[in-house]
Length: 491
Image 1 (cartoon, rainbow, N blue to C red):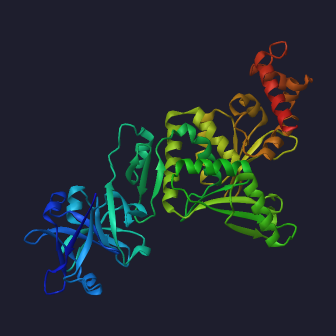
Image 2: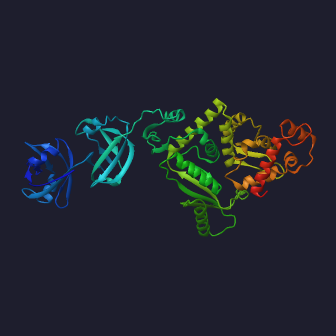
Image 3: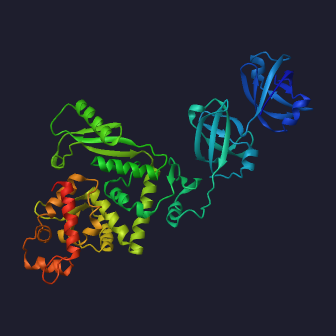
């Protein structure tokens, strides 16, 4: 509500501060201590508080009185109560929270609040942040402070704040509760929380998730993501991967603001600017992503052999807290798989890992190799055991390991793997099925060809043929599924 009246400005003290008294008929609209915004017609704006100086009134800052020569002048006054408080913004972006606001909101050091800064009732800045305390020498007492953008420094603005709950609610699932135990957090709403850790830039995360919906994505992140350092990142080698990884990242991080970089090996020594223009257009057309940066590399060693026609997309955010969040999710997922021996989670996770680090290397064999390192191989071996898929881990170098899944293991578990093997990497998926087509057991099923005795025995022991080596219902289903997928891929 805005109250309008005309009044004479009087002198309040020797320092030159002015004062206006509220007309008797207007006093009922205000209480002592109310914070208000004042407009002296036509365009002088400032904040003040309702004071009692023999009767209810308002101080006018001496600089305004002096600049506009207001003393003893009759002016039109508009007074409007504000819901929050006003404060000057210091050069470092800090504001001091009034003690009555601290008391009414029950604020303590480390509490998380949402703050809106307004100029002439228009919101110009919004932020979630922690409350800090400091001691001002002049007042010799601890006061509560809050940091805003330095660009607002030097201004006196209106602020409204709200304290976020930090008590886990019944709607938060046990996995999320474990995740939040490692964080300083506040609930933005039922499905969102803002997380803090030390002095790291905070992030707003989605709470409405289940590990079953994240296992594949976290497997891909395990293979192709950054898990240490100062920035979070994940690499996508295909348009399909890029769309999926970005979708999942935005699902988890609600205030996501990634940077997109294309890493490209220039094997044809084409003009760099021409390559950048072409790649930027292709990636935007295929994924809707606008590229921010490019890394154009000269061919070197094995990079030439692994050349990607459209380069690799690096999705990156310069917030270390995202590393903490993703690594905490990974730890919880691996723990859930191993403690509960969850086969479905294990398979989804492993298939996600294959999406990043898997390949079908041999032209006449249908096996899959997963590249890994000395540290990660132990985790992968433990999870592979939960899948009940047989594998072989081999050391290939000082910090280079490989995990091999044979063709017959893929065939045996095809009903579990068929919609998860290289689904975001069409070139690799096609290569896998081309190589599976050469495997004796599959030839027997899809081409009705004769095979060696040991292959027939294997097919019989796994229920794909009967004792007379006639294809069973399971064998027919497998054969049809293989043929359908090969037809789709043009194999």
